[in-house]
Image 1: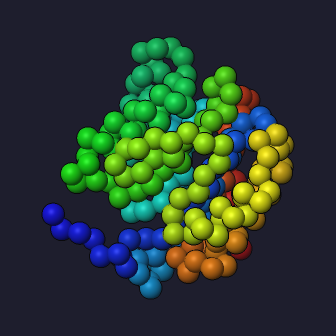
Image 2: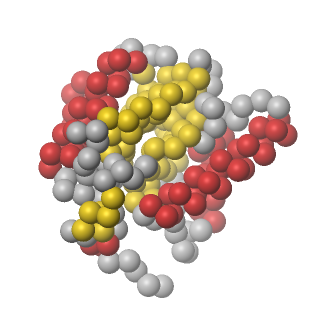
Length: 201
């Protein structure tokens, strides 16, 4: 098996949090291979369905193909069930796909967030581990971002407070992680639907 040199694995900072009425997912926009910045407008936050989204870190091709496959499978399942697929089922299906590929893994870490009876967040590694949590960070900027979140997080935050904390955590990572930068893409999911935002700085 050929290993990818560490300097060629893109850095990133992706964050997911539960707040009072839903979940918020965010990731910065920079895509870099080693010391070369490939793009300043990369997208690492994706909608999987109307009630579930994902924020990713790692190889861009791997995260794109994984999300595309998930979107198709969840759409088919929702047509069969005639109801939305809950976030825990989406996370479990993604873990099965990742585990099936364990000998030639998709090099991406994923935060799944969504709303069913209550909002929830799940973290997946490239081999398919699923860890439920109230908040999480993945990528090369994790250490900086998680410190900001742990010092200020509350599960009873409103949407505005959650958005402010997410942006502050990613900003702190950008200041110290050269592989992260150029703004933040945000996906907010509540029982009333989802909305996407983009902040450039």
